[in-house]
Image (cartoon, rainbow, N blue to C red; front, side):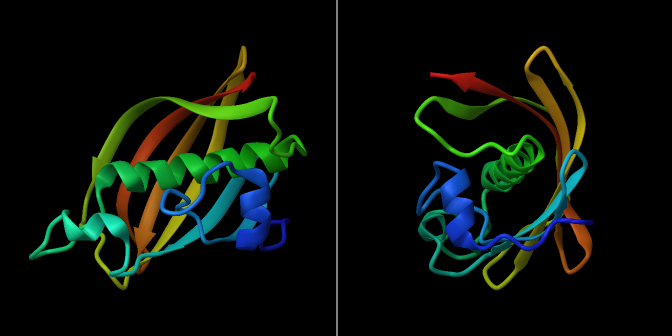
Length: 149
């Protein structure tokens, strides 16, 4: 991959999400127009663990999918050299084929990968995978769109 790492400061310049909903801590590598590899450090201090589940903390699957969507948005921003502004926002508009293969628990490092499949009429289609210890824990196809507001 050709892109350098992206730290959390630049991620916050590109995405509108903030704690507790910013689910990407660092981008490890990316290639504009192709693929991104991002990292989420999962800690016991995550606000969702108090209720999901008290005796066996598990990261909610919907948040793993959201991490894939955030990585996909970062890839789109880098592909088109866009920056976050009050006039353009990427929206998550669809999901297909979501699968959850293994629980994600405190102490895990969630590595999120996303690849651009295509862009037609303003709808982007990505495929995403989430890994812990090089094992797939989740995968899905995601659709996003950029809207000018």
